[in-house]
Every structure is written in C-alpha cells, then in structure tokens.
Image (cartoon, rainbow, N blue to C red; front, side, top):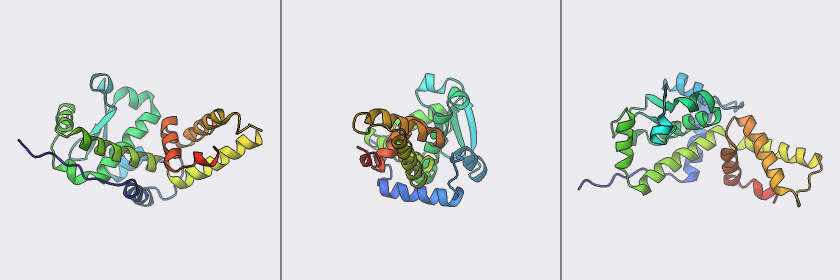
Length: 205
C-alpha cells in the first residue's frame, strides 16, 4: 500500500504573512479591486483557459495544472460570474504560492488527472489543501487595511442614516457587506468570512 500523501500545513498567521508578501511584491498600492487576473497573466505568465461545463460536469470552478502554468476555469463562471471568477483565480494563486513544491511532485494537466490526484489524498489532507488556498484568496482579494477602512466608512454611513444598531443589526450587517463586496469585486460570502476572520463585526454587535 503506497504511503499517504501529506499536504504541507500552514497556520492562518503563516498564510496571512505569505499574502502580505504577495501583495507587497505584485500590488503594493492596494488599489481596488485587486487585479488578480493581470497579476497571474503578466507576472506569473499563467495561461487562463475557459472550459465549457467544467462546473456542471465536475462540480469545480477551476483547477491549476501541476506544473503551475495553466489555470482552467469554468466557461460560464469566466464569462458571467466575475466575483466567482476572481476568487477562483486567487484560490489557484494560493496553490502556486503555498503548494508549489507539492503540486510539482504530482503530474497532471487535465481534469481527469486533477480528479485522480484529488482522490489520491485523504479527506483531511485535501481539506488542508483547499482551506489554505481559500484563506490565501480571501486575504489577497480583501486585504486587512482597505477592509478596515471601508468597514469603518460603511458603519459611519449607517450611523448617519440613523439606523438603530440595536434593533436592525442584521439589516445593517447586510448593508455593510453588500457595500464592501462591490468595492472589492467579490461575493458577499467572501466579505463576511473576512469580517469574521478580522473580528470586525464584534465592534458593532
């Protein structure tokens, strides 16, 4: 029986540091939205390839080849779901930064090869792999400094509109999340996770 494949483990603090390094090197201005597509194409020389029915047939939005040169993305997401597309690219960037050596040890370039690779990993190890990439994606698309600034501005706007934080907290949170998501060009779910990770919602509850 072959030995179990082990994914390198990173704490959230370690991933945050790697995300900071990534942004300092490739987009130090932190102007929004973070140009993840341009960074991957022009800085990393990544080929982005839309594939028809990738999500419908395989239940994934995208995957990166093991040589880290090509990101395949569901065609519908690529054309019609900008927030999901951007997160997919940022997620795969996470694999490039965090899992480069690990990926290059396992050769695949097709969806069939990727699925065989994914199935060769235990559920626990695969969870590490994907959680790392998701956390990295959230941190580079929604960096802490501009997130805090936009959060404070949104809270101030709600206060000036005379919203009752005591009686309408859910409505206020929804307003804040939607407002911030538009600025970062990501989904509301991504913003909610980032607000929770940075413990910003605790300041108004």
